[in-house]
Amino acid sequence: MAHSSLFTSNTDEWFTPAELFDELNAEYGPFELDVCATPENAKCSNFFTKEQDCLKQDWTVVKKCWMNPPYGHPEKPCKPQCPKQKCKKRGWHVETYIPGVIDFMRKASETAKQGTMVVALVPARTDAKWWHSYVWDRKARAPYPGVCINYLKGRRTFGGAKSSAPFPSVVVIFNPPT
Image 1 (cartoon, rainbow, N blue to C red):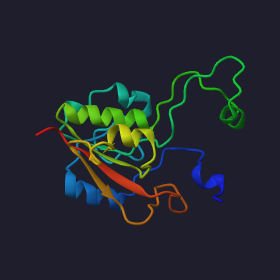
Image 2 (image 1 turned 180 degrees about the vertical axis):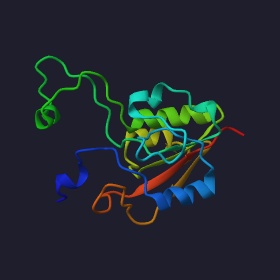
Image 3 (image 1 turned 90 degrees about the horizontal axis):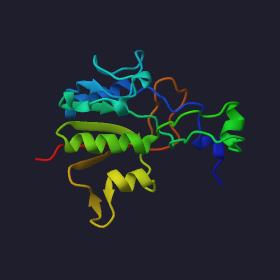
Image 4 (image 1 turned 45 degrees about the horizontal axis):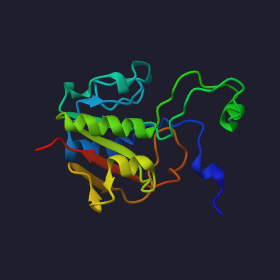
């Protein structure tokens, strides 16, 4: 039985490994905008921070975007007398909606349809709702049109981590329509 701590973290913000970014930038770039960054980990000179809320920004101002989004589930604001275990554990309640990976994948898909390529580093969670909503078309048994999947060998060690991630990673490329 897997230990539950292997699949949790106190943060869902991890720096993209530099060598992986360089490889992907050479293959798919050059990337002009890092849509999910901090000033310390930005991979492009142009980037959006959490405070700028990249989901409300226009990514189509460039031709190619890089995205290593937070990997967590979205979290709705708490109701009065919130019973959520997550809130009890961290010692505070959520006042506003916290986006999850599904929100970032939706934005990437929409952005590609508007003419901008988005290359995303995400966990290979082929059972997740976001995977089947934006990456894999179950009926066609293939990626959605314009989507390419690059499965990565091994597990990545993200910047700031002492060991490799407890999950495999995948690169999802959202290409504009041709």
